[in-house]
Length: 398
Ligand SMILES: [Zn+2]
Image 1 (cartoon, rainbow, N blue to C red):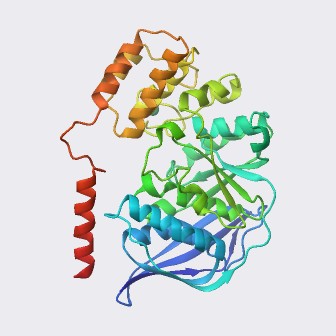
Image 2 (image 1 turned 60 degrees about the vertical axis):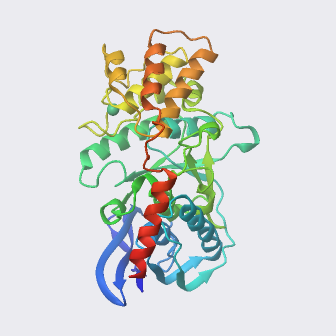
Image 3 (image 1 turned 120 degrees about the horizontal axis):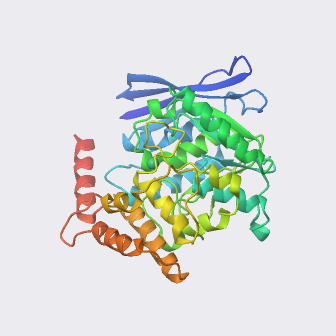
């Protein structure tokens, strides 16, 4: 039987930073075949979970173990409520993608019954439209009884910006800190080598990894806010972060709230469009050579500019001036259903709100280009998924 062992390592101090880490050891029939160290590094002003606490490690490594059908053994403690949630979380992913994910056993040395949940919330802040919307809504009394007391935002070095690119990360950190200072929220950086050691599909694993990283702050704030990727009316499933699975990444010590799914992306942009500091520092692009700036030409940059145009706004100066925006639009074919639905929402919003533009016809053509062909077997097509699951089961039996 193949397995994966998580061994927590003692806390380390590096100057004014704390490093939490664990060994991740892969075993085939009891024989070690691979050993890596997963680590998180953050300011020593944050009170860390104790050294034996493996909640963060388990959350980060679970999708790897499920992909490789490895039972997990943990030489440390895990919250009982988290373990309970992860059973259901695994079942959801197995149902969505049986060709990739197997439900695996999790054996632990110690379990914990959580009793203390800290007040306040932490929000993952990348400077993109989703997190910009979430921090704006919750700090401007726009959420009624649903308002969360955001005491901290966090920027993760090692996710969108690679660990090696310190200059880009520092530039993003500086810009994001000044945006959040405008609404009196401190920003805390946290570094991790998760993406360097994980082989899991990032599109599917990003939410469990994100919660795994932010759970390091659970003694500071007991709620984690994740800005929604897709609205309830156009849910894109399977996807790493969704209202169906995000709450299953929680324990009694940290609640996870999938925030903003009752708004489309254009409605989100409209909601914070008057926040000048936010809008002028919006950063949606990871495709350009310079990681802290919007390239203005990739699909996401073009789409976000049309989010603004669809609600009758001008394009903010966080995008480079581009006289060929329509030409860029004509080159785009949506990569998957989620992106296609984003374009549909832009079109629908503009029509519903009486916003006119010659570009509407071009968006209509783009939507037509992105429609799945009737006889094609898409990547997520039912027959293809079932065949892959069958092949994987046969392989595991051998
Ligand atoms: Zn771009």
